[in-house]
Length: 234
Ligand code: C5P
Image 1 (tube, helix red, strand yellow):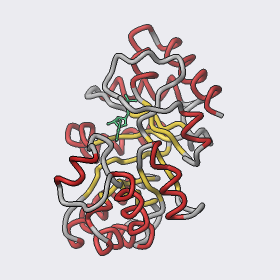
Image 2 (cartoon, rainbow, N blue to C red; image 1 turned 60 degrees about the vertical axis):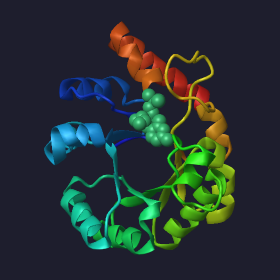
Image 3 (tube, rainbow, N blue to C red; image 1 turned 45 degrees about the vertical axis):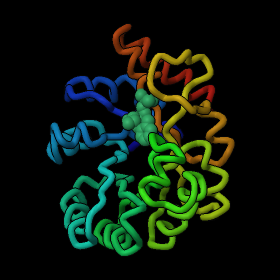
C-alpha cells in the first residue's frame, strides 16, 4: 500500500513503461498516484489494473465524470473493480448524480471537482453561474459533500472558503502547486507552494512536472526531487 505522504503525483505520460518507472522511483515519497483522462483514454481500465497489480499503490482516478445519474452510476460501477482511492466527478453534475456515484462505489472516496482553475471569474459567469469562482466553488463543494462526496478538488486559493463551507471532515486536494525553487516554465499561473496549500487546510497536493521533468536527468534525480519536495512540504 501507499505511504502517508500528502503528495499526489500526476502520471501525465502516454507511455505505460514510463508510468511504471516513475512509480518505482518515487514511491517512498508519494502517497497517491493520479491517472487522468489521457491515460484512461489510451490504456483504459486494463492499464489502470496493470499499475495497481504491479505496484499496490493508491490511485486517484481523475475521470471527471459528468452525465445523468444513471450513466454515471454505470461508469463508476465499471471502474469499481480497480478500487481507486479517489474517483472524480464534476460537482456541477448535481446532487443526484454525485449520490449515484457514491452509492455505486462505496469503498472509493467520490471526489468532487468544483470550478476548474482554468476558468476565470468572467468564464464562470459566462457559463451561467451568478457568483464568482470562489463563491461558486464553495457552493458546489457544500452541495457535493451534502450528496455524499468525501473529497473536493479546488484551487489552493479556495481552500479556506471551502473549509468553512464543508467543515473539517472532507478531504481537500489541490493542484496548482509549485515548490519554492520552481522558476516557472510551464502553464501553472496562480500557484502556492505545497507547504502553503497544506497549511491552509489541504490534505493532499497534486504535483506533476516539478518531479516528472527530472526523469530526463535519470531515475536518481527524480527520486531525490520527490524526496526534497516531500521534506519541504511537511
Ligand atoms: O505538471 P503539473 O504539476 O502542473 O501537473 C498538475 C496535474 O494536476 C496535471 O495532471 C493537471 O492536469 C492537473 N490539474 C491542474 N489544475 C487543475 C486541475 C488539474 O493542474 N485545476
